[in-house]
Length: 258
Length: 286
Figure (tube, rainbow over the protein chains, first blue to last red):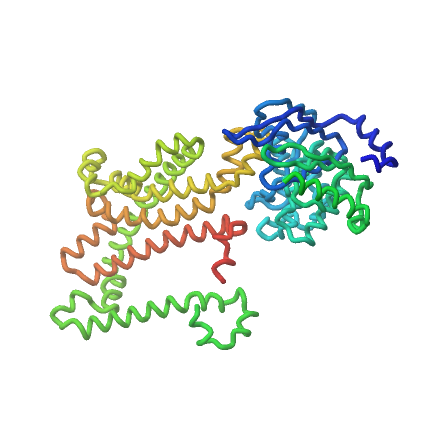
């Protein structure tokens, strides 16, 4: 967006960073349903990209394609990340493992030493502020705490690409705002590449450095916005007039696309 | 439990005694009351319904205790039978578990295997055991081996079904997580499916333990060679019209079934109660 002249310097630095993933002309059909049509998308290291769109526009399909869980019908996907973190809509914790054991799970899969995984687990649990709950079972946690555990589990491997599939959709507004705030500081700290799918315009504007609006049938990218705020973002920017203006523009683009 | 507040209006006082004898009493009192009523009804039938010359059909409870449990010879005989029957039930359950769990594990690996084996698991449930008696006797003889086989056939189904349900109960997204990290079949089974299946497996074991006891007693009737089990004793006492001993043996057989169910209840609560809501103590207190 042209109005962000002041941030162009930062933009340039980012663009020199390597893309962690890029999709070129990616289409996907499920049987006779044309789910995605020639999607172009690049996420760079240290870039937080949000994907907003109406239900059924194929946002989650984009994530599945990025992760390699499904293959595109046509087009190319170039992956240059080393580790990927995938945060699902549900926390998907293992109820038989404690918080700490859940967080160390991916370390086990990747053959990390016990000592290393213990050390890292303590570190990431502190990052999501769950250090005092390491011995609790998921049954005893609130929805927000379960989601934090889920994020900590992925953080253990220090991924350079994070995929988020509406992770906070099931939470109450207070927990959601809280987790949004924590996520931006996490992002400011770790500077991974992030692709964040959500229904909420407000959340998308608050979290991202770039925002893509998708339209449906077939799903494709209809509009793109740059969000100029610095990271980590302070909660009060949600109440600034520019924020409202930007959110209004995104909402208008969204209304047009659905 | 709904009757408890009427008997004990001072509910507030019970709170502090949590973990003491209070909760145990509240748990045990209602069934004990029912047991007392049954004994009372039993006496009623013995002395008021049956004429003296037909009283042998239902001897009074104290008669059963005196002749069935306090008579050394009879008690030894019944306890020997109990041991024999329990042994058969344990063997049967162990084999049924090994077989049933392996079947479920194989079935959980691919849809086509599940489709091929599932109908046979159902068949094992519908087999009329009586029809197999001559065949089992023919193959395995009329002793221990055949009795154990009866137990296995009877208790296999709940283990297969519950284990399979459990192995398939994993959230699909957790499977995705393992796929993302290139986990193989074994890792998936060991780290994901089997732990997730444990609560269901214990449910299956609890059901099958009771069935296995039934199988052991039924097996006794047909395959009586070797040391006598409870089933053989039941048969023997009823032929000789020794109703006190017969009732004592029936009670012991019931207790064995209850014990089998109870043991797996305790094991289940101990092993998965801390993370599975259906096995946790909290649910029962509600």
